Image (cartoon, rainbow, N blue to C red; front, side, top):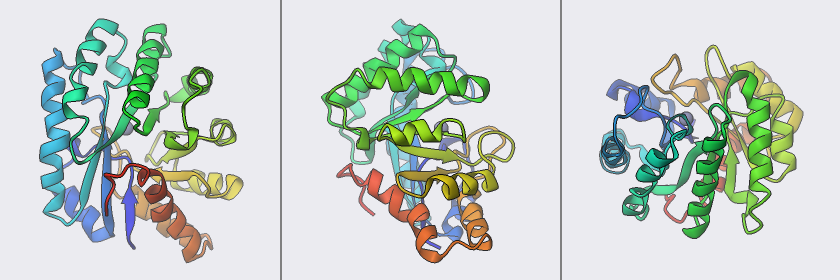
Length: 266
Ligand SMILES: [Zn+2]
C-alpha cells in the first residue's frame, strides 16, 4: 500500500530500514530536525546536521525510490540555553531555501521552561517571516498536557498564524481534542512502548474521525519501529476500516498538509 511517512528520524536508521520502508510502500519521508541522541557541543554540529538533512539523506532515500523532505530548527531538548539556540537559529536562513526544506520543526517544549517557550516563539516568528508551515513537538508523559496548553496559549498570541499550516505532533487521548478544536492539525506517534500503540491510535481515529490527523513512526535512535505506520494501516483493516479511510490516513491527509509547501512534490 502506498503511504507517506510524515515524521521519521532517518539519520539514526540504517540503509536496510530504507529498503524495508520501500518494500512496505513508502513513497515519501519527512524528517524534522531534532535531538541526535546526544547534545551537540557547538552550533557547528548543527551546520553539519542541516547538511545531512538537506544533502545526504535525500540521496540515501532516492536509491530506494523514496522522496526525502525535511524541517529545520533547533529542537526543544537543546533550546534551553537561549544564546546557544540563537546561534543555531542564525544558521537556518542559509538552508531554508533548499529544495527539500518544507518548514520549521520540530519546535516545541521539552521540560516546559521559560527559555524553551521563548525560543519556541522565535521559531514561530521565523516561520511567519518566511511564510512556512510549522511542525510542533509536544513533551512526553506527565508534562504533555501542560506543555500542549502552554503552546496553544502562546500560538494564540500570533494573530497572523494560519492554524491550518501548523501540525502539533505526538498527541494522545488527553491532548488530541484541544488541538483539533483549536483548528490545528494533529499527529499521532506510534511507539512500541511509550506514546501511542497501534490500537490506541486507531481508537483515537474512531473517536475523533480522520480529519486533520496523521500518524507517524518517528523511528529515531530509541526503541521505535520504522514500519509502525504500515503495521497500523494493516491493523485498521483488521478492525474493519475500509480502503477509503485507510487511504485518508495513509496518504491523503499527510499529502494535504505537506502539500501546503510548494516543495512537497511526489
Ligand atoms: Zn521527532
